Amino acid sequence: MSPRPLTVALPKGRLAKQLAPRFARVGVAAETFSESDRRLQRDAVMGAVPVRFLMLKPDDVPTYVEHGAADAGIVGRDVLLERGSELYVPLDLELGRCRMVVAAPEGRGDARDGHPLRVATKYPRIATAHYAARGADVEVIYVQGSVETAPLVGLSDVIVDLVETGETLRQNGLTVRETVCDVSAVLVVNRVGMKLRRGEINALMACLSAASP
Ligand code: PRP
Image (tube, rainbow, N blue to C red):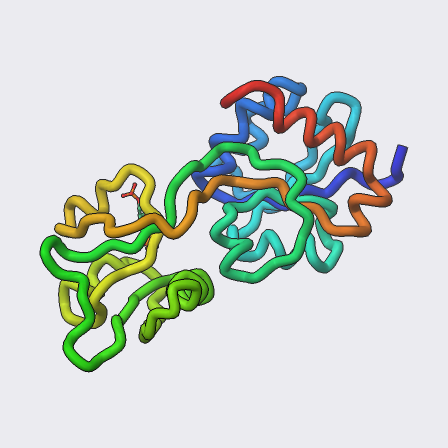
């Protein structure tokens, strides 16, 4: 057995809560993922494997895994695509399912005459790749959040954003024009971790893949 626990980077918030039932099946107490717990490192035993969970901002999960500070991590596929990450993705957890879409206000969503389509998004790399694949001329405008506002006040013609329930789009009078890609939470592992901690990572995968949430 390795001297230090398997270190697993997790995104704080909604997804951590959804992971709790899967880990509970292998003996990790649901309280380990409590939102009121302010500890950023949480130790547990998963089956017979000692694990240290790092509670991180979702965008930081790949950083910790890429640098080997974590052996593995769980993160939305949107984060990986936007980063252009080359981490191994050995498992799709099929949790946190949503879609990356192009959306626009009802009856609008075309470029103004003689101008490229203006696309507001938190995901400039994903949006740029989506339109480049179509050979479309677009201006991508980066915003950090509340992106649904952009086409309502003339900042953009359309948005590229995540939609889960569709409620945010609906309440802001936007409709989906096309799907860019499906998104869900995935397990990421770095090359060194895959070699040195293979047995424990296999145990982690068995835990995470067992049955549906
Ligand atoms: C995300 C996303 C949409 C919303 C979609 O935003 O960017 O705005 O959730 O969810 P829905 O389809 O269930 O309504 P988030 O809540 O992360 O806030 P943000 O706009 O500040 O990024």
